[in-house]
Image 1 (cartoon, one colour):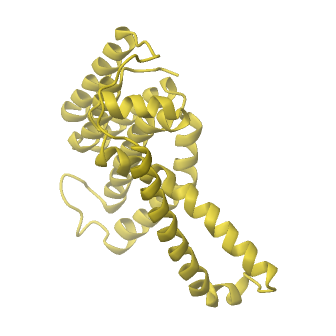
Image 2: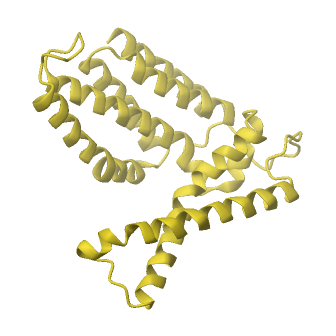
Image 3: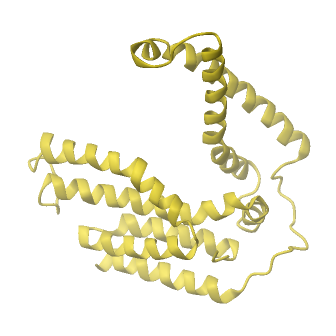
Length: 232
């Protein structure tokens, strides 16, 4: 994994996201996406990005093509796009570029919590904002885990969760899911407050050493990617 110095990692991710919004044409956003793919490869998050593209962004692309290419067509497409299909693909690429940049920024840190702590402290994001970041990272796994528990409990009681019966019983799944998530959030806030998680403290004695060369290279490449998005 390309282990970047925390401020350089944060700035690189923000520059890649900025490049997605600077791009004014489909060709420019494609150039930016090439830069993001290189960053994805360098940070070893290729499989995570592939799963995002396959299972999340591809259905979104189908929906955008239907809305802008069929329903809205070319009459409501903002300039400089020439057709609804072109605008749909451009919007989809912008979303994928932003997602890839955020994956390069966060996925390597999620896999190594000690690096995440160092990143939050060195980047000045410790405290309430860091707590929000960590809570957002663990939210989806927590939802999946508790939803599996509720489904297993319903099946143990003899209820069928397939077909129309499963759709009708959806409210009976959502209510205990929401209440259990609220209870979990309350307990987690109490634990974190008691243990002083992510408090603003001066970081001393870092066990990790960072080379300035990969960080400088990443910054140069991301600045070049922003320039491609703006002038491409």
